[in-house]
Every structure is written in C-alpha cells, then in structure tokens.
Length: 199
Image 1 (cartoon, rainbow, N blue to C red):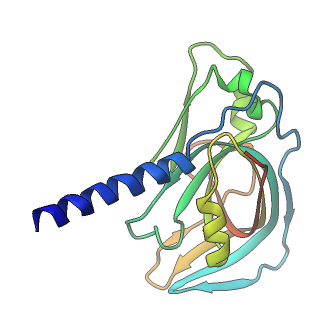
Image 2: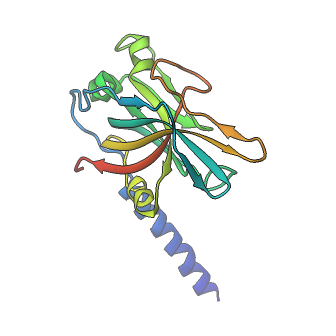
C-alpha cells in the first residue's frame, strides 16, 4: 500500500513537472512581435448565447494578435467553468522583449499588474498597449488550444466581446475600449478561434 501511494505521488509530481515544462515561458529576442492594435467592430444588435445558466450578449466582434505577457488559470471558484483562464496581452512596444525586460508583470484575482523602477516607454503607452483579457472558450477544442498557450508566445484570437449575466442578478461586463484602466477595464472574450506562432 505504501509503495502504491509513493508511486501515485511520484506520478503526480511528474505530471506537474511535465505540465510546467510545456507551459514554460518563451524568451524571444528584442523587437516588436505584434505591431497591430486589436481590431474591434461594435455591434448595433448583439446576439444571445447560452452557457449553462449564464447568458452572454455579444457587444463587438474582436480580433487580436498579441504577445502573451502572462497567463493565469482558474480551476475553482464560481466563474472558473465559464472563464478558465486570463491572458495578459501586449501589442506594439508592449510585445518587445527589450521593453518587457524592464517591466515586472503579475496576475492575481482576475487582474493584471505591472511595476517599473523606471519607465522604458511612457506610462500611457503601457496602459493602452496591454490588457488583461478573460477567455471564454466557445467549445472543448478552443479550450484545449487556450491551454497550450505559453507566456512569450504570439497568439491570434478571434471572437466576440461579451457581457455575461445570470438570473440571480450576477453580471460581468466587458470593456469596450483599450484606453481604460483598473476595475472594469478587462475584456471578456468569447473565443471562437486561436492561432499560435511556433515556439
């Protein structure tokens, strides 16, 4: 029994190490990797989508190519089934390793945080060229693709910015601009497709 327990523990450690290896950050060289700003087309009349007891209303079609600055997975909590991961994404000079080497980036509690000792680019450029985005996979295949994303990688994501609500009054609204900061500034994306640059 003791040997079986030890084998199970070793297997869990091995699986954890393997998962960490597959998701280890990439270290691309300096230079802008994702030059274009996200493309958003606002919708006059949004469609309604149902995910379990959650209703999603599409607010805009959204298309982004960006560098993954950080990722945060959520496996428990009221919203983990709907939004299993957040990606902090950067474009323009916020996709340049030379700039990012001077910015400390973390994620916690559905927020993205950055810190600098000295600004490598203007503060406002950091704020408007990066964002924390909540990912709602459209299906199991999209979820598997999102699970493969690594920090440092350039990704292309297409889908819709959505507002989410439930009958009990709970709601979670998307940001509709890249110019905002703080609470409410994150994009809530219903992801229909994911493309990734080769590691």
